[in-house]
Picture 1 (cartoon, rainbow, N blue to C red):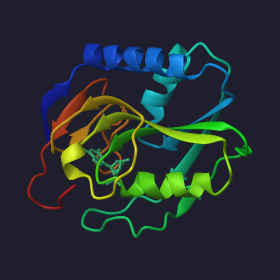
Picture 2 (cartoon, rainbow, N blue to C red; picture 1 turned 180 degrees about the vertical axis):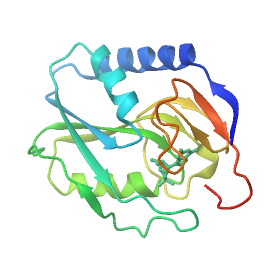
Picture 3 (tube, rainbow, N blue to C red; picture 1 turned 90 degrees about the horizontal axis):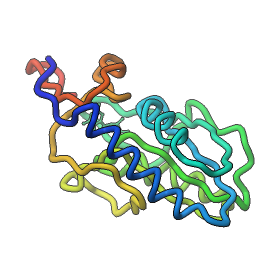
Length: 177
Ligand code: 5GP
C-alpha cells in the first residue's frame, strides 16, 4: 500500500530544474541525443527535456525488467530499441532510478557498442547504498535511502506511475517489490 510522501511535487520540480541548468551548461558544442529509458523515466524525461534550451534529438529505449526476486542477467533484452543512429552523437541516457546499477550498465554497454561520441547518464533518483556495479551516473537529481518508491513514472506492478509526487510503497508481505 501507499506510504508517506518521500519527495513532493515541488521538490521534484526544483530537482528537474537544477538538472536542466547543469546539463544545459554541459551541452555547449554538443550534438545530443536524449534517450528515455521506458517506462519509468517518461515523466521525468518530458519534464527535463522541455526545460533544456539546446537543439536535441529525443528517442526511447525499453529494456527487459527483471522480476521481484531475480536481478539483471548482465545481458539486457531489448523490448524496444532506439530508432536513430547514435554514431558520433553525444548520448544522454535518462533513467528514473539507479538501484543496483545492473540495468543501466547493460543499457550503457549496448549503446557504447554503436560508437557514439560520448555517453552520459542522467538519473532522477539514485540509491547509492544498493549499488552492485560501478556505473557512472553523471547527473543525479536526488539521492534516496533504500526504500521502494512509486510515482512520477515509477510503478509497482504497473500502477502508481501517474502520481505527481514520489511516495513510499510498502509491500503487504506477499511479493517483495
Ligand atoms: P537496477 O538495475 O539499478 O537495480 O534497477 C533499476 C530499475 O529497477 C529502475 O529502472 C526501476 O525500474 C527499478 N527500481 C529500482 N528501485 C526502484 C524503486 O524504489 N521503485 C520502483 N518503482 N522501481 C525501482
